[in-house]
Image (cartoon, rainbow, N blue to C red; front, side, top):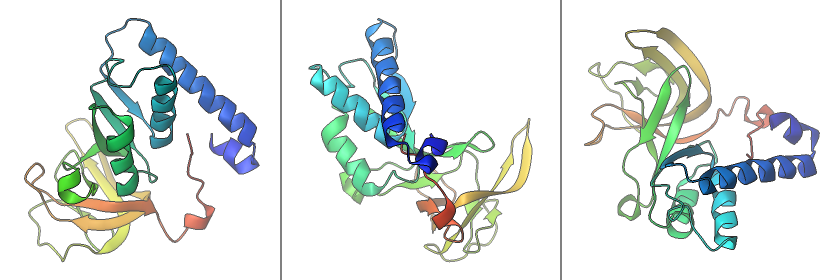
Length: 200
């Protein structure tokens, strides 16, 4: 997809997106017991609109939970999805990759103006310089901007200091996640102009 975007092949890009939606609709109609899906905001919107044109919804097709993410997942889009696309299906914004796993958002909805604050799967925090720290170390003020730098430590895997291509603001712990998180995720400003964000 990124190559198609860089080459400006919008017709090819749309054809591929249509193909992905065709596959999703075929799978959803095949009678499988599929209740959860991972998708990007633009594919979720395309799928919801396709299903609507068929007289159904994501929820009516059996989907009860959705993980969706990307830097285009903003509070405004989050509200739009909840009000116009989901028909009652639960969706959580997610952030991550295969090295860190998925960071889910704290509960988001009308109560907090659909704000998205991601919390890593294990206690970690981002300080204002972008360095990750284990929870329990002294905390600096929240709402500082920095580049996302992850350290993954599980029983099976250790990856120290992995720099993401994103930046954001540090968020304080919440009831569901008693460690620091990050909000306002967007391409890191030092090379944002050269970063191609997928529209798939």
